[in-house]
Image (tube, rainbow, N blue to C red):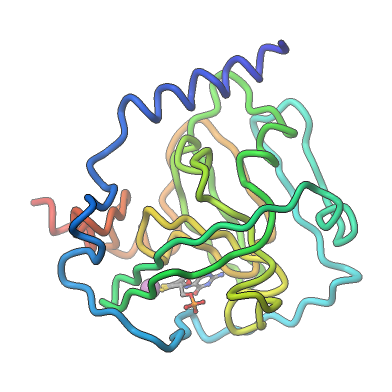
Length: 214
Ligand SMILES: Nc1nc2c(c(=O)[nH]1)N[C@H]1C(S)=C(S)[C@@H](COP(=O)(O)O)O[C@H]1N2
Ligand SMILES: [Mo]
């Protein structure tokens, strides 16, 4: 097994061992302070990037063994998965049973091969938005680089052609119009994280804003 595969396996084991108490218990499905909605609200900076699939690319770069730059056909050729998860926005709406189709973030990261000192990622989006996560957070089974929601291709408003979905964190960590995943050693707060939003963003802990901790 190549070194980076062992490292990923070790990181997955670590993530499981140290899993934060963010998983819904059987009887509590909706995080505190959230209301279930049946519509699918749209939240962003108000910049709608129009991205043509013919010049769309997704880059994985930084502390990886093989930097990747995928075009649309390359992305479609990757193994496809479907995952159903709940989506929690810090503005207090939750949408349950969202079905996402796309590529497992873990699968893509495995192909890139994070180096030993890779610990954090920055997600870069086509509207200039960024958000940060621990690398481990992207290795969970439910994290998906999605091209479809509820069986339909993502609309531009919801982040099409491709967005990240990280169900265990508040939705601002789920970058729409995903352009690149940058892998680095030290944590680098993203757009909202530098504006007072909580760095970890676990809905079941109500980690909404940095002040909540102090
Ligand atoms: N690129 C980008 N991604 C983004 C945002 C953004 O402004 N730009 N907003 C985030 C926020 S605050 C939320 S709640 C979700 C909303 O996703 P939706 O509009 O599909 O409901 O997208 C997140 N991803
Ligand atoms: Mo949000």
